[in-house]
Image 1: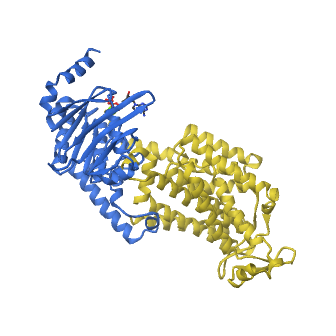
Image 2: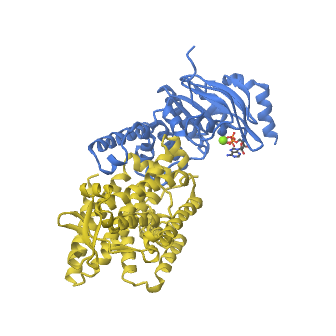
Image 3: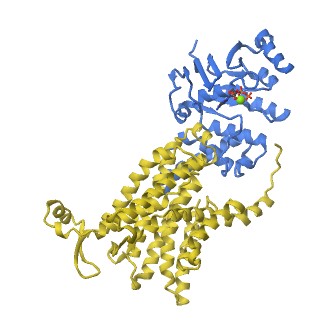
Length: 354
Length: 256
Ligand SMILES: Nc1ncnc2c1ncn2[C@@H]1O[C@H](COP(=O)(O)OP(=O)(O)OP(=O)(O)O)[C@@H](O)[C@H]1O
Ligand SMILES: [Mg+2]
């Protein structure tokens, strides 16, 4: 399967092409929304893994996204300066887990290095997804949808009602995430292009990992569960284990997107945890054809970009709701697959003698 | 006498008030083809489900290769060496014939999420070998040209063979076939019969549910008859044909 590298090359060229075009057109301000769209695309890709490959729906992914974002936001904005002399804080400082910086008003603030927050957010989400995944993934279809929806609502309510999470205001003044010297995730004007490429890098890597997974033992196991669960189990696949792994991996990817976008935006608000966000992700995955990495990615980029540029106005959420309904009614295999599918059918029509 | 490959004792299963399988005991000798027959609703598929672990028994034991398996999870039972096909064909939608068969190899492969996603050399090597093995199974069943077709888009008879190929990929000791000739025409049924005999010759023990009596009489070493969940007869094909109890059940069915 050498052509996997060709696909990745084509994707990389597209990424660079978009940057060059926006530059040539003098519309570099688009890069901000494109970067955000790329992080949201990670969530969509994570859902392609869970829904498209393994056939398990989640209406709670905004919850994982928010846990990721809020964890790193809290960790990197909490001020530990008053406790500097406490032994615990002292030790953390000595371990270089803390950084001293100036906040928006020029006051000194001692908080965790964003690396700590980002990694902790992944760890927390992995644990949360594991714990809720065990009982919830025993459910199927509507029941699974409702259970994950319930999880999403709980996260939303907690975020909205907790002072630590800034209640309705969310958390702002989240500092830059310095990944490597010279490489930093932040929303400043002069690092726009770098940030676009950082986000694109994460997406390209994720696409590569997912494409590798499709044609492999675990990838086939997930698709077999999707295709016929009883037969998958009888073929020796531990379906419960595979579903749980897919769920946890999907949740962790989503948390990473949430954490990175929070550093890019410099903050996070409760709307990221809202149920409508979860519906939006599912609508995009459906529009992209459920099982398609490419369909999901392109739909995520197009729809999120349009939404973030404000094209849908005050109907923003309604648009995604409508997309979901229309797709389910008229193109259950997704917008992109509609034409391609009918084309293929004509060519390879099979005689049915059932 | 060698110990039987499968030894079932006192197996029972009720669905609500309905006793689908009642205190059934029997053995399947190694290397044999054993058939399970009985009228519709007799509990044949339920008995298969109890052996393969798709359904849990209320009572009784299933000894496979000398080991109690009735409490094991379904996928564990599969990796002990029991493979099956389904009365209602269960192929994996959205996957090619080759991929369907490669799923059958699952327990013999090792790649996990990490090595697969990272495309480690070990997983690539394994993948290549798996493809070759799946392909050779398709070749041995004469359906290699279907390898890259979507499995669920095939004709019915071909789907049955693909399901068989997937089960064989598990390299089972015992193969459970639930009505493998259902929906097949006479020519296809004869082919299926020869295929099953070839499978037995390769060393796999076969336990088969089948309504086609001429096929059953031709290929099986032993036949067991189930009626209303109870075993009413067991023996060689000629004995079963003459068994008054069996004749009564089958004639009774025809009168209805
Ligand atoms: N999951 C289930 N829940 C409730 N009743 C069931 C279930 N599975 C089977 N039954 C009932 O158990 C009885 C035996 O069914 P089973 O499918 O085992 O019969 P069978 O011998 O395979 O019949 P056929 O020849 O039609 O395939 C039937 O009355 C059936 O309705
Ligand atoms: Mg049956």
